[in-house]
Length: 396
Ligand SMILES: Nc1ncnc2c1ncn2[C@@H]1O[C@H](COP(=O)(O)OP(=O)(O)OP(=O)(O)O)[C@@H](O)[C@H]1O
Ligand SMILES: [Mg+2]
Image 1: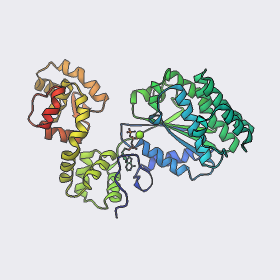
Image 2: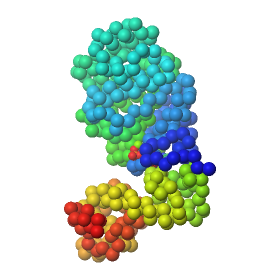
Image 3: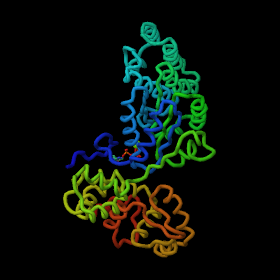
Image 4: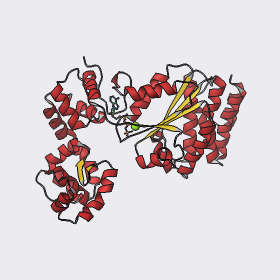
């Protein structure tokens, strides 16, 4: 029987499907109060990273001695050093308050709006350890003085460690969309400072996540990056066929083996596509009917935006691929361009996950649904309209 409802936003609980191995590993390590090991979740956009983080959080929330704070860099009102520090402090303190381990009578968000005098008075009367009161007081001094913002962030990041020591807990800090930190002034320096601080902490575990591979390489994955070997990398990829079957069982309650194969092939196991198609069609009809309906209802709106971002040459390459021209020579011939010119466009198309290299000199489109949409829209078209003409062309 179907129990879950289709959603285009991160899911947890009964709507969350599969991912058993990675969840188990995250849970085992993060729930161990003695372990200081953290993780770096990376993978293409919309693969389900945030959902894994939220599911982990809800699992860990049940444990008394683990305090887990989920902070997304996307939710920050602006990307400045002051805001990063403030968001870190708020996220960590809020998690301790929610767990009943920090008896302040006012929410931390309210505290940030209050004048320093009021805060100091409140802290003096609160039933909390002097050391914690001191740390919180320091936060507002940093905030008001606005001088050494790096130190303010270091302090903010360290507040979890102080709270963890005082309450005999472990503080797990999840920083989703972490690559955004690079956009903050002196971003990479900031990351280095966080890493130095992290190394000294024993009761804090850090989990970062993001989809911008280049930035994650620079901060955590490559051997010259600050967090290299500090955070265990976890590559989040699309669902396996078994997970797609599990998804369909939970969301629609039925699917034949052949239909499952076809759906898996078309969606590539993308959890986002499975949700998106479900929301548009409820999976009523055969898979081919369902996908046709989805493409005609949502295709132009969804795929056109990304397709329009490509240059006219890139679009011609993509269409040639879609028409079955797989080798560089064939694509170049189709476009009537030298192979070296066409070749120079391929690295960025690969980097942005539009193309994948199959073997030496052959390529294919990474996204079968995009290919399906393109085939429907551009069938038989040799030349691709210029950017400003695409809208009219698609509307025709
Ligand atoms: N385990 C899952 N079970 C069911 N649906 C899922 C699962 N994981 C992700 N989804 C669905 O896939 C889509 C993307 O999920 P999510 O936002 O978690 O991915 P993400 O990798 O964090 O994306 P982004 O790169 O945009 O931050 C959503 O529609 C979500 O409902
Ligand atoms: Mg996300």
